[in-house]
Image 1: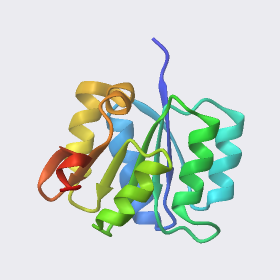
Image 2: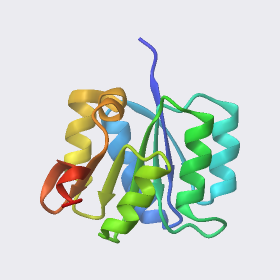
Image 3: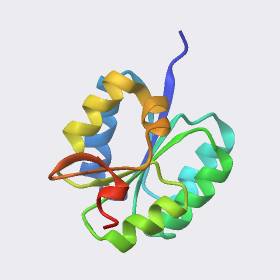
Image 4: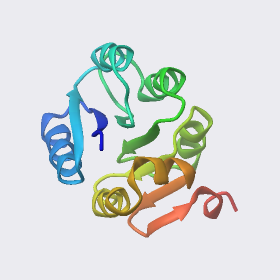
Length: 144
């Protein structure tokens, strides 16, 4: 069985390392990047099954990076991770190709459990999902 590759983009080293450890425990080969350009270089050179993209990175918007990663890897699971729990931001992320909108720090454990049981493909197929302090739900639950 081939390993699945996850790309974690977060300019806060502690957050990036936490995600890297979490994903390694879920059996992913993990590559970390602090900048969008570094992430794009990795994504152009190898297959990515899962990407976790922080909204706020120094060299481009996380939403821009998300769209570019989605074009490079249309079948990958794309997770946006942010502390901003705003419906308009969620809608923007989903319109650019996000499968999951994770609100930090609440969603880490739920994301880990889902990856262990469903894998990245299962998350991609059950999109759009929001993972926050209330648990896991479809985005339509927010769109009243």
